[in-house]
Length: 307
Ligand SMILES: NC(=O)C1=CN([C@@H]2O[C@H](COP(=O)(O)OP(=O)(O)OC[C@H]3O[C@@H](n4cnc5c(N)ncnc54)[C@H](OP(=O)(O)O)[C@@H]3O)[C@@H](O)[C@H]2O)C=CC1
Ligand SMILES: CC(C)(CO)C(=O)C(=O)O
Image (cartoon, rainbow, N blue to C red):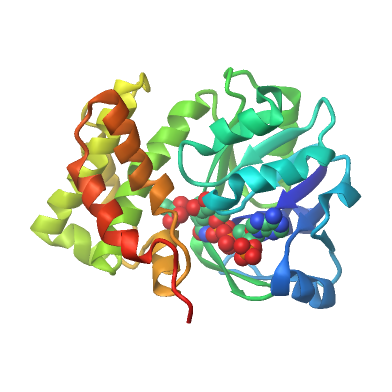
């Protein structure tokens, strides 16, 4: 299976490296200093579940050179979705699948519009990984899981093939037969985690331990549940309680990729996370005051800061 990784960052770099380590044919798209370092020194992953060094990788900023692909693993930040989708068009044959492991619930709408719905497989990932320095991906903790599936719920040959490639590459992997709901389930937790850790500027431990911030976390997630239900996603009415209980089980030092971005002065995905909840809430008549507070508080940082 010929895999092309669009965006060799925390997510794309980590999972792409594992697939290459597992013996699969993987090429990478990158840019800037990261591209230069990847060309010069290859791709390194530092990980508690095993380091990887691929001294020589096929990496470029010109996707046309990599055509055709069986599967494109799409891992750019949400603001780069549309432009990156345009760039990968030359990679597609009739059968090519594109699977985005980005956060948010709008990503696949954009991919479907730019690439055509037949190419898009739904996906979510669970990992904490960043570009530590050009050419180096740092994975924190042991969580590293991919969940994906066709939107019509069938287990197609391309989904099964990618599943098997991941399993052979020591990636925790699961096929979802209800991927839209799976994406919304992650979105509920992610919006709660990213919104609270970024506004409180701390990890989940102190947030869940303090009665006021715990109630805020609950209410942020409850708003996402209400929005999901209003647009027809079958989440249980008490799903925020379920996610709060889940949150009690994660390590107290856990935080979100958005909190990391805030600490580094990077641009933030808040517009596509809490901000998207607010916009959907407005359209559906669902009040979203907690997510509005998060979006407005983080607005001063959302474009990042020069350091
Ligand atoms: N990091 C994590 O632990 C997790 C992240 N996610 C989600 O996954 C998505 C990706 O996040 P993450 O991996 O952290 O992002 P990163 O910023 O680490 O990686 C994205 C990479 O793609 C590059 N890129 C963007 N556009 C192009 C282009 N046109 N050509 C070449 N390279 C390009 C970026 O370059 P440049 O830096 O120059 O922009 C960057 O190197 C996000 O939606 C995030 O929310 C989900 C779960 C966990
Ligand atoms: C919730 C988590 C850490 C899981 O992968 C994540 O997706 C993020 O912070 O972006």
